[in-house]
Image (cartoon, rainbow, N blue to C red):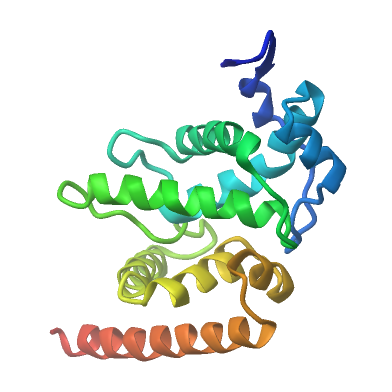
Length: 217
């Protein structure tokens, strides 16, 4: 896909091939590069989109799973988010937070839009879908593993939005406490507390489900 930038064009299709991102870290972007991108400088725009695309794609996959939702795949949504970021760049102003936090907010809003459109038609997974059981397990163990994964997906859907977001960023995306705090604009302590509460709720709900399962409920 080519996007016109005042006479020059940026190929967003090439954004799919991005460099490595340190586990748990946010993409690093120099403030001068972001400022140049906001002014429409072609190479700076390409650098910005390339830097944030992997974070955006991983987040979309974590929230939507592997199947298309409302006709939109995680890959397509990530591309759409890049277009939204591109459209918003001229209005972007640095406010003391990393540019990745801005990209995350755009991605979170885009996911919310898709989930709203799909709400009446399908159940949207909130964490990455692992549809293939561990091949090293026996048939009965594989069946139990898949059943437990299904229960956990349904339980995560009961979490309040902030607890769910912390869990997705920390567990599904492997973000550090520091990176998660920057994306959500909260303190490190707030991230740790939200994670503790989310995991406590998951454990309690999973235990309840397992008890029902064992009793044949």
